[in-house]
Image (cartoon, rainbow, N blue to C red; front, side, top):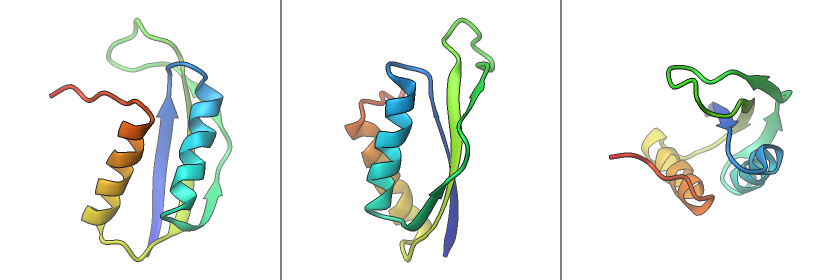
Length: 84
C-alpha cells in the first residue's frame, strides 16, 4: 500500500531531526521519497519556535495499526514526549 506521512519538527536541530526520521522510516517503508522542506508558523500555541515540515511517500505491507506502532516507536526513540 502507498503511504504518505507528514513530518514536522520545531525543537533542537530541526533539519537533522527530519533527516534522522527519514533514515529511520527507510527501514520500514520501501521506495521512500521525501518532498521539499519548508518552514511554517506554529498553530494554536504560538509562543514556540517555527517548524520545519516535509512529506514522504513510500510503500509498505504493514497494516495501518502496525505502521502506527512503528512510527510511534521512532518518535519515542527520537525523544518525543507525548502529553497524556
